[in-house]
Length: 154
Image (cartoon, rainbow, N blue to C red):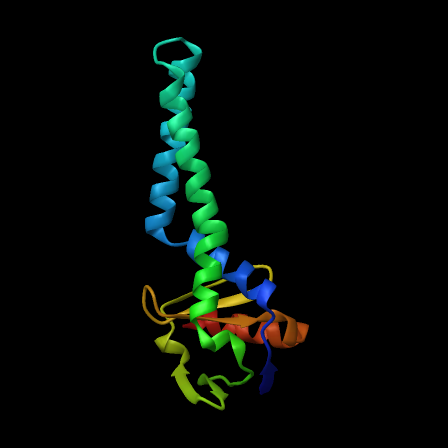
């Protein structure tokens, strides 16, 4: 089965947001900052700390969200040419391949270490930081079900 893939900037940036937020390091950092904010909010409520500590935690949380939700996906999109070209995505029960003017990538389904779906993309990982996102907009419902089955078998 062959599907022509074209990327739209706004959708890719949204897909990259899901990619970055799903990373274990970022999840851990966000959890730490949220726990800090909850603890300082409680201590501030009981007047055990000064408001500056709570404000520092809140400011840190806002800075992290701006960085991970806006800046990091935009910078990644800008530096990666992969999303600015059209691809031909071929897949069958054995594996898949991507073809474009700049090159070809081929893999077996067993090479996929993990995958997840966001609302607009299939996120395919070959190593902890080596990934590819495939837009779901070009798939029919049947093709989406078929490729989910391939991913789950791997």
